[in-house]
Image (cartoon, rainbow, N blue to C red):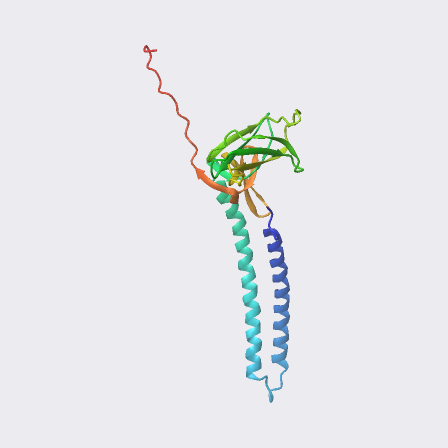
Length: 233
């Protein structure tokens, strides 16, 4: 989930490189100026050599400008990431994501099957990857289905609130072949945050990268029944 090189790290490398280039640029100018002042009037610097030196100086200057532009782009990208993700707040979202927090006595997922399954098993794993509950999926037909876990383990125990759990689906057709499946988180986006230069959204008790979202729609407005005129109740 985390990029190998974060935006902050990249910006730091660019700044370090720019500092070194700027120092070399100043040194280059000082040496070139000293060379021009002290050259022999009867044997001036070869024009081709002088042109090559000027080209090198222009190259360093261009690299400094490039680094400045890259730094600006990184800063803009980070700001735009948060600003762009903020537009998702309040929308109903669907994300391919399998991890959520067990809270207030329940953990909620959805799952999608790519075809009708003869058998479908759901597994709930804890943060260490251990299967704490396993059982038949509530539906085995093609399409999207919801699953709510009450926190009870296969052994009859009960987990505490606050734990993070992951759901897996294992589906087979009548011939024993795998049926395509994916675990889904669905709900309203309630918040966004930046982590290591990437935008994350909160849906229910899950936090996931924006890149995991596969569908967005406007939140459905609540319907209010029409008022009954006075005297007609």
